[in-house]
Length: 388
Ligand code: GLN
Image: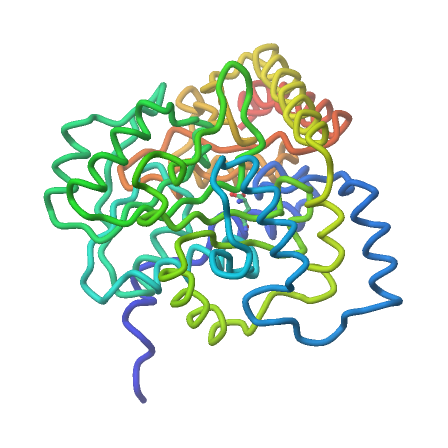
């Protein structure tokens, strides 16, 4: 019997998605996979009802419905400060997961090297391996998760094709400063490297931080493949709507990859999501305010529970330090936590290249009542541990 592709031995199933299944099995509050337990804006759900009646229900243009691309171009041109052509510079994808994979397949040949900051969102390693490329890891050092400039330069010196930049960063909550991004941009230009971004948390950045799009830095639009999605911005993670924005040459090729991978994102959902793209600026300030309040509420609860963590400045994840608890690994701890305390978290080791086993990731994209209940349960873990 023939063997399946050897690439598949190089990575495991997603630990984040596995933790959702474990959470459901034990009836835990799912603070593992990052998605909200509240509804999207009413404009989107109303539009979805209308679309059910009026359609479209058939294929759209493979690289995205015209109206969707036009509204997306308007919104992103405003936020990114770059004029984006909806006809030439956008591919609409099935979530940013497909956007990242398509971006990687667009630029990488087998054997190419790709810089990945560690800790990293687990898809990047799988994406790299699936397109036959080799990840070169550069550590982001706790507690501030900064990179060492020389270490990054040394990675570029290895002759890399692309760098993956998750900003704001999942899982650390780091928001890269303009100065850090300029340093990366200078290296990318000096060493002729693409930058593939994952900016799905672009609108979840807490003051005094703010989001800088690396594509907007001088000379960077041509070499940046900006990937993002509507999932987190409009609380529609299940709609699987993402996109790539880049220069016409790159987009022309990314469209080919996307077409043969998926044909296209769901037509009715693209039509309904236009209502979200048209929301006024106040929507985005409201979103930031809501997540800032949720972060503060949640961190106060962690303080009261006596848990140690790193404060995030963006996205909606918190890394909690579990060194004080007597478990052999973060995975054992997370399974125990879901089963006994009824809170699901992601073992931190699934985000690190380095051997890190003392961190877990939780998220706060939940209704305040869910967060309050989760905090009560997390406050119990010290006494539950004593009973082991
Ligand atoms: N990005 C979210 C997370 O890190 C959800 C990932 C996913 O499962 N698509 O939890």
